[in-house]
Length: 144
Figure 1: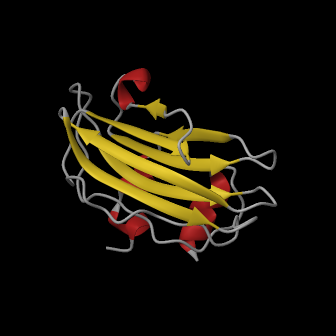
Figure 2: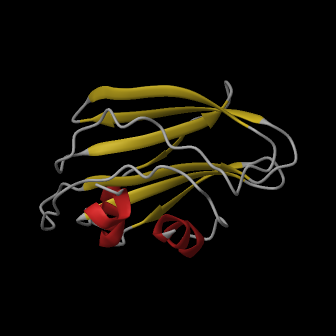
């Protein structure tokens, strides 16, 4: 249940989800590895979330996720279609046809590991939480 501990440490409650990750870490070279990506809905209503990863100027992942009401204990993770290695990327999410929220590792000076939680708050607002904990890119965290 190591994954649940990681999710709890990020402030989203217990979640039994698959964690996406990477096999190696890099130095602060203007690139980061995209580690754990988790989606949770803490609202009493179901929500549809659109999710996207752009890597070196190209879209490498697009998906839509229907999150059940208050699924904080059983969140979702998008299928990993982005590279395992370090790169320059952005992560974007929005509630069905709403405004895109965007985050990228440049705001944190390109840490070795950059992980994202897409969170629908109890009031139905979308937020992107980030972490630079290298554990979230480790084989232990990802179950590899």
